[in-house]
Length: 159
Length: 391
Image (cartoon, rainbow over all chains, first blue to last red; front, side, top):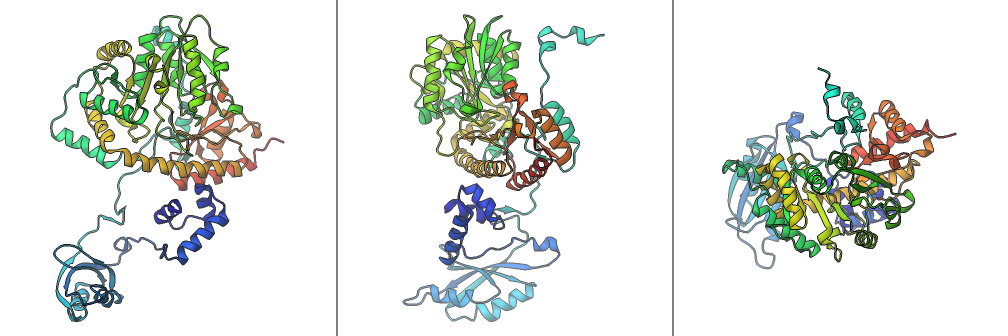
């Protein structure tokens, strides 16, 4: 199962017959395993990694450090939930260190994000302070180098 | 000047590489998919490259000891102790070479006198025979059989032994067949070496690349074999470092001294840049190597499955990154198959006879290429086969 997950994590579009061959399993077995992993929510989603900038879209991404006061019983979970339910929020992580939650937001413009932080995020009860960092240029994301210049330089046939 | 007449007899008699022709044709093509490459498609892991860059920044640009950096020899000794429980003395039993290619040449020149015979199981890497010939020896090919998954047997070797037989040159996991010899298989060979007092040169460059639960057995780790073995290995295949040209030889102090003597007059030392990178590879590179091996394994299964499905029979290779399907069902020779496939489907591979006459009827496919390339190559080969079935 681990091998199957690793293959899918790298390329979710691999056809089942190819996966089956690479794993020395039958296609039926692979299909069943995938279904089970989806059902158990080990596989949550199959997404596509897009370089939107190259496509021509200007998106603004901000990483926001949020300090919050944890609540009795639920700790950070309840406040994290109040934050992650917003569509604009791409990711939320509970962090160790000088702040509590790292919130990653995507918007169309700086103003968009400023608005969100001012009107939505900082007004949530329990949010003590926020610090926004705007992302200027992505180099590598989720293991993928965006503008990778390394290529196959091998001779086409060699002993 | 008529240069043809002025070349040495040894060079003139050397057969040209059977690969050259395909290289020339394939290099001209635009959309060629190559299963003909005998090196990893990975680029050397960054940590290893970075250590070399750092070394240059620190000014490591001088000669090293003839035998190589002591640090590197110590790491190599530690590796063999750890993995094979075989102790080599870094001071006297290890020589760092410019790839296994140099190690092989040195070994041959160190042990072969005019007319000495060296047994070479075939199919095998293209330079084995040439190295023996250039050293003045006689290469005696011994055909390994497909019925035995291209593993050589002691009986097959013994049939070719004469009073002039001095050494045996083996390379497992094997290029081009992907065959691996088990410990038991090798013990048989060890007995033979003992019986006829043969030197065994063991090229173990693909030793880290074994699959399907098959463990590599280091020949010198077999009982009593360390003293008679010249073990050759390097970093090219396991660490994706082919262009660095860095390898090593492990053997008895007398033979290492002899090889070092040739090495110091011809090469002086292996490049210091590559030696620094090799130290890093042995200290911190294992996890990257393991990842690459696991990737090769998936591709191996994919191409093995694919070739069978399109009707080319092959045994399941357990090592290196080659698979060696039989193409006799097409009625074509290996060269015809390779040439026609290249022209009509733009898939490059290497005809089996380039690795010895017993490779005739087979082609070598390298799966050191992306899954997408393997899949596309299989589609094109299937298409080719549709038009080339023996009636």
